Length: 189
Image 1 (cartoon, rainbow, N blue to C red):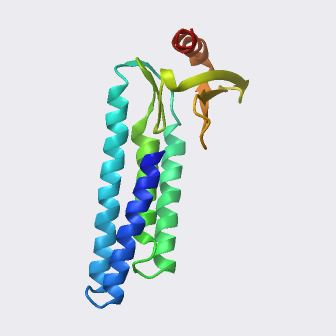
Image 2 (cartoon, one colour; image 1 turned 135 degrees about the vertical axis):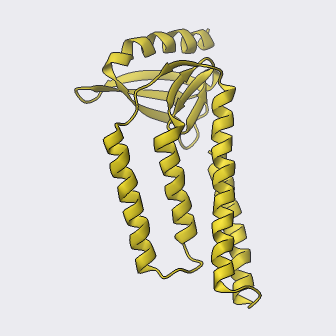
Image 3 (cartoon, rainbow, N blue to C red; image 1 turned 60 degrees about the vertical axis):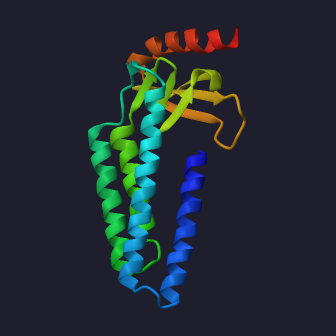
């Protein structure tokens, strides 16, 4: 969570500097846009490496959860590209939001296509959210669709996003329930 706030603060600070340099006539518009793209790219690289390093710190994979279907991923990817191109056509290339929105789209696509959904030795990974077993207070199951159930996992710290909602395929529910019972109940005792 803090990673996203730090990334936003980094972007806003560097953006203010780039805009000030452009307004002051020290850099051209083209250099300002390239500067924004470089900053967003660096932020993306750092955020993705943090997510990947955190995943590795959880140990080996115990259970790979079924993910969003490829069709839904492709549709989301097409919609993302469409919105970015529409924004590009509506707002001429400038130092406004294009690099940042492109960065957000790339990070969202990374989460959907590559971050994955795993139960690990020392925690769980769900579309970029990483929780260690010792950070989980409790969990509960709710009825979902005909093919899925909903798992709510509550963090011990009651921060802004203290409840994680996970869509689990029904054929994986019993296996996952056994793992959660063992890992979370063991932590509470």
